[in-house]
Every structure is written in C-alpha cells, then in structure tokens.
Image 1 (cartoon, one colour):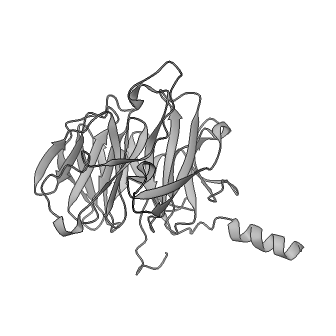
Image 2 (cartoon, helix red, strand yellow):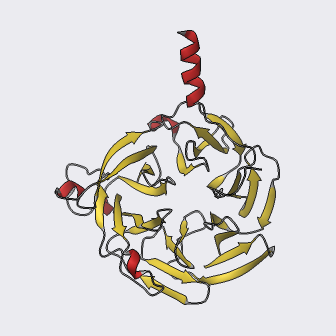
Length: 315
C-alpha cells in the first residue's frame, strides 16, 4: 500500500528538464535561461512580452511602439512592424503570438482597441474587434484561434482550405467558448464592465486544454489560474455553439495570487509567476492539480517556454 502511494506521488511530481529554455522579462530587458538557472543571459537591453516562434529559433518582443524579432541563428535583432494599439504604459501588456501556418505575428495591447497583424514582408494591418479584445492565441495546429473578449474566452475556427496572408475577420466570426466573467447584481450589458475577467490564455500542444488567468479588474484582490478541458462537439446546443464543450478546473486558488500561466514543453507541467516570501516575482512549476509546487527562477516576468520540437532531443 505504501509503495503504491509513493508511486502515485512520484507520477504526479513535475519533472523539469534542466535543458528547457525560458524567455522572460527582467529589469526592462529580455532574458533567456535554462530551467535550472544556468545559461542565463540578456538578449536585449530593453523590451517586454517575449514570445518564441513555433520553431524556437526566433523571439518576438515589444519595444518602443514596435514589434522586434531576435534571431538566435543570426544573433541579431530586426524590426518587424510598428504597433498601432500600443500599451497604455510600460507596465501593461502587449500580447504577441505567432501564426503556426503563415509568417504573421499577432499582437494586441491590453487596451483592447484591436488586433494587429504584422508580417515580415507584408506590412501590417489592424483588425478592429467588438468590445475589449486581446490575448490572441493560435492553437499549435493553427486550426483554432482563442482570445479574450469582454472578460470571457472566445474561439474562432480557421478554414484550412483558405490559408492566406490577407486579413480575415476571425474575430467577427467567433463564438463564445466560456462565459467566465462575473457581474455585480446591479450590472447589465457587456462583460467589459465586470469586476472579474480572463486576461491570459495558453493552449496545450494536443489542444485538449486551454489554460487561463482570471483576475479582478484592476489587478487587486483575486488572481487565479484555471483550465478548460475541451471536447469537440457538433455544437447543437447554444452552450457549445463554438464547436467545443468544456469542463472548468481551478488549479491554485485565490490565496496564491498567481498569474502568467504557461505550459512547459512536456505538456505535463505548468508554470506560473507568483510573489515569493521576499516580495520578488518568481517562476514556479506545479502539476495540473496545483500540487508539488516549487520555485525554479527568481525575478521573472511574462515567461514563455521555448518549444521543444518532436525531433529535437532535450539538452
């Protein structure tokens, strides 16, 4: 019995490969480090919100009103395009994501004025979206586009027969996946007026889970991490008109004050940022049920794990 219990505990314990590489923001610059803290180095002196390309060879980030891309092969930085929907201040986010199927980068400021497409050779276009819309996240296959709108999670489907560079109104053709924003009794209307909302999203590689951050508007009082277990459905009911049904799971609880959820390259381990006992922002990992929590790096903001391709061996 004791042996069975120990075997179960070990199976749930996150195994962090020291060769995994994470990019993050520190002291107004962009840094990378291995998961064991070795190989720490500053990539650029000024920047925020780093995001790895799907092949793990480039790093997009925001700086001074524009999206820049750092190439690790060329060891140099290049300007990708100006950002029209700029963050209101350096403390606010510029959400960046790479399209897995085209050389397009999505970006959106926390102001939610619109989603902008930036291509290396195609110029850039702004997509205006209804309500406060931000945090666009392509699924790894590029089939689904999840984003936050008015505090809820929305989903748009891509027609794989119509892969193209030009603008397509995914946001106007989306359906609400999960209505998670909360209302006060006296409120009516859009979720943009609610005190609790979703503002960060991440897909698992198998696209069966969608992790989110849920907070009180203004960033005080509540900060939780949860995930949706997704299951494809025919969408016959209004509740699953998005084409998915889901079950909601809460991972850490309100007392953790955790944010910036990310999924480690193995898909079995979660990471998040929380304030440690010294008052510093630290990177933690845990199992999907929130257990076996442990700190791996200090002084980390907005982390993003470098993808490990299936043909690539861990370092």
